[in-house]
Image: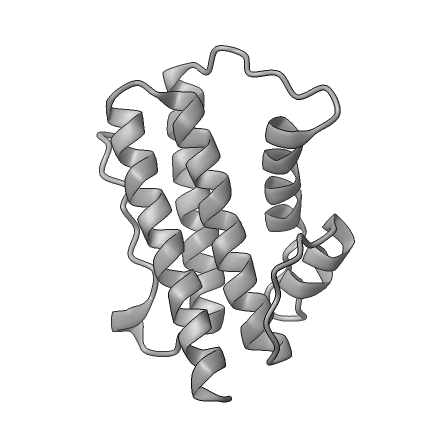
Length: 142
């Protein structure tokens, strides 16, 4: 893979981590709606990294749910649950009737935990060196 594409993958990978760091900061300040948007941005960045990694070409477009499922699902990594989670996040934020309701802390806890799980899963498909994988930032008391 070309150095330029490899750098783009790493840039998107780091951007996903940066968005999650900001999501946790917003969470800690009870800014749950902002944290939700940042989680979605992190997922978008990681899926773009995965797309470049698998297709060896850059992307700036938004993937449809079908394209996302084809990208994420393999024989060894069933991705339907991940694709549905990402699709739900997009619908909540950008759907036809998208409205921001008050987000409860328990719901945001689950959302952050699930986003971390998905990011770790996708990261493992991209990066072979475990020291460079997405590092979970989930630090809340369980």
